[in-house]
Image (cartoon, rainbow, N blue to C red; front, side):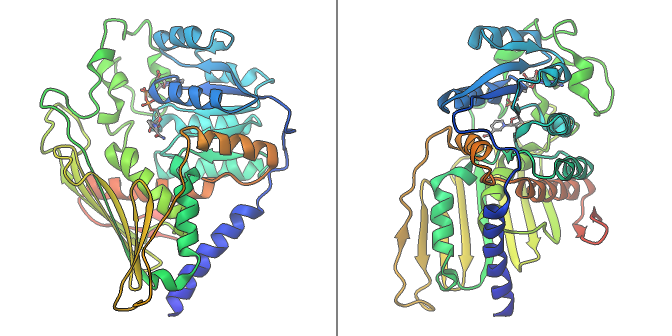
Length: 405
Ligand SMILES: NC(=O)c1ccc[n+]([C@@H]2O[C@H](COP(=O)([O-])OP(=O)(O)OC[C@H]3O[C@@H](n4cnc5c(N)ncnc54)[C@H](O)[C@@H]3O)[C@@H](O)[C@H]2O)c1
């Protein structure tokens, strides 16, 4: 009972904290938000469209280090200035907010630069690539002193599902003691199309003249120009955490925010590259166990060779269960809650809802729906899982030293 109170108390205080933080620099409701976008690849283009769906908001500058992507930007946003060095974009004092949609190993550099220059930041997930990056980003966040809004790109935190989940969780009797979260993410592709392959992008134009390779590498190990690594960065450990960073982080993001979960005590990950023997360094089949300090065991399994199980999420308590699919569904455990009834959430969302929430936060000063702290904890959980896989053993979080051991 004590630990349940403690756990649900944390959920409640997490929500209170969300409402309490008010950035000191608030734009007037009629003022136009001028946005600079760093990283104009697949996600960058999607986020451009999200910005366009938000009223009185405009992308006025784009930065990318591949000339083809800048040509695309000139075609799609002719009025925007284009840059191949993000520092030149940040020199433009008329920019209020920066969206970062570069590969994960570059997030810390671009985040610290953007926030340090006094901009509101929308940071794509997974927020931090390494623990050292997470800490560096936290220092930048603390130095800003909450003067600017930081939204992390776990967009489901802005979905109506979050309100439904919080509503169902608001009466602690519905769930009882939550002990497990079970999640899957299974996909399949035709035999000649490996998951995450982008053959259409592998053109002769991906060459050392058109790509600023040193800027792509950032702090990653130096190596000669390699078009395969540039286009297929998701397959390589120097730039990617594989589907733990691409998929698990999104599913964790929702429940870490809904339940106010802390950094896990331990992480264990198993798996391998069982199907796509195309030189990728990240596994295509994997399972992760995260032992949470709240006495909740999170199990996530994922594979790229069969989509039968699809994407599922279940939160299990001794009084009831929550399932997240198209809607949030609550089902009572009849043996402990004989009078409990099933409930289905009704909330929907539009694709740009997370960007809208970012813009609303800039204007109102309210904390965004996926605040820095959530991105920070999710990043560390993901790094713990990947470290466990690479080391071939369980890893532990040392809260005193703030180290993965
Ligand atoms: N929230 C979501 O649903 C979602 C979906 C897809 C991707 N993402 C995230 O968005 C990010 C980008 O993914 P993507 O699929 O668009 O990748 P991508 O390869 O299509 O695009 C990345 C872009 O960054 C550019 N870039 C690389 N180094 C740069 C640098 N130093 N300065 C400026 N630009 C640089 C590349 O040239 C490329 O255009 C990743 O973090 C990914 O996890 C999030």
